Amino acid sequence: MNVSGKYIALWVVVALAGQLSSVSAYAQDAAAPGAVIPASNGAARSQATASAGTATPGYRVNAGDELNIYVWGEDRLQRDVRVLPDGSFAFPLVGQVSALGKLPIDIEAILSERLREQYRGQVPKITVSVKAADGLQFSVMGRVKSPGAFAPGRYVNILEALSLAGGPTEFASLDNVVILRKRGTQLVPLRARLAPLFRTGVSSGDLDRSAVIAIEPGDTVIVP
Image (cartoon, rainbow, N blue to C red; front, top):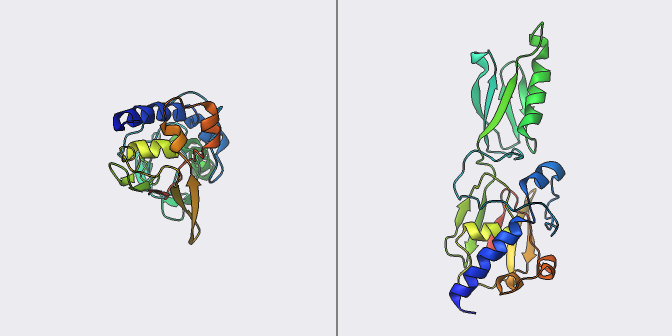
């Protein structure tokens, strides 16, 4: 297959991969670390941008994210907070709040409960939104067209990560792609065999046999 044919196949594969990993699946099922995305998941998602920004619905908070918190009718309690490396943030009248892995609606409920004793009547409505999804960052390096660090503001799989990096170069070894994942102080290698997905006529069997891994914050994807 010539080079242009390869990259036509790439975009077809990325479109198929989008069908494997809908944002709602992450939000509802919280995929386990290193999970291979099943071939039966939901509808296709649009391609992510490479710049950090407001997170999509269903986004779970990561360390480093910036949150906007607004307590209706209480201007003194409206502020932006940065989630610390331990996954928490401080908020007036509440103290330290654990946010790691939670949906914004979960944080709203925690703040509402903690503020209850401050009000005789009903606690004002609280709105929490992810202003900047800076914590969901990963890197792609090696034989890709545009290596670098990416913060797409939503969860992606390894194929979408390669797409954000411009796709593999002509001589990339796609049967030996490695994801280095942090586990405490250790780095754990996960291997992905992606070459069958870059040929014409990709089948559902090819998808099932390939390790289409969900990217986690802090991952480093290496394309040899």
